[in-house]
Image (tube, rainbow, N blue to C red):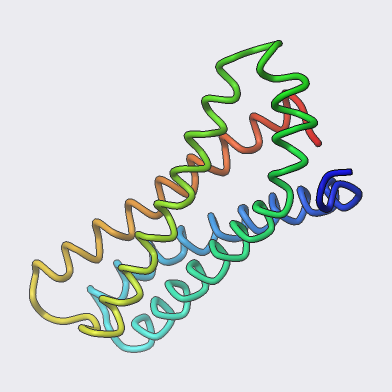
Length: 155
């Protein structure tokens, strides 16, 4: 018996829902960063909310995915994917590593935002933009790759 194997499917659905919510949060974060820089005011607070929400959702997504991972590793990857299509496990491993990078980017983003706020310095704002775009691209890439892997074979 594999750890949490009986819960693997519902947890996989939860993992996908959390990943989609994370994608929504980083998308909104990117939009509200632009509005906060241009217009200020209430957009700054909404931007902060979506930045923190994105970090929280990314952490929850990774946590739920970590519970599902042993079942995936044995029942899907070892028994099916490595024999049927060797490229799919590579894409999944890339997705997993980039998911860890998403957490690091979002942690750096939240840390900088708490420390500096939306300062007038253009380099700080450029750093916010870089972190926000990086999180946006990584999360969306991970969401699409994860859904593509599940379409090949699910737990």
